[in-house]
Length: 197
Image (cartoon, rainbow, N blue to C red):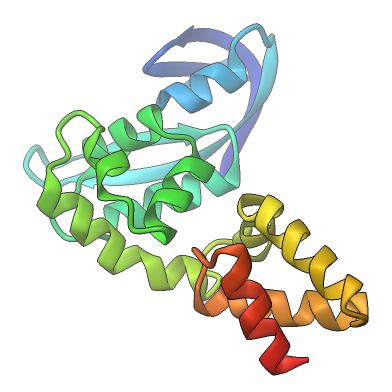
């Protein structure tokens, strides 16, 4: 299986990318996120995920600008009832960070806003993927907690430092709290951290 292809951008549309590598054109289906990442570039690297289409007995190659987006695509297609076309639609409508944020905070409305995704699919997506994301099913999981909750984390961390706690210990406590409860508010983080410090 091909993991990635680097080369010249021979063709780019919002749904399709052709990469020319040593005179061979590799065509892949892409999301709008990947389209935006490749727009204006003359060359680049695309990460490949091959998906079987059992109905037609064929396979389709999907391409992604980042490994992170490819990983999310695989996670989305692992959810029962959500196929590659729906996964591409989700990744075209929401950035990987927006999708993870919606899953972690159980925001069905954000996921339902994607064309073709109803309430049941949104709930299934949250139910089946939340634990994977929390447990590090994503390479960016830890960074994600801190990036998404940056303001809450900074506010809680600064309050705890004012109370005289060590920054390193505060960071460890906050990381543990956010792993259990990614949607924790500032006051929740402080209360939980005080129990741990």
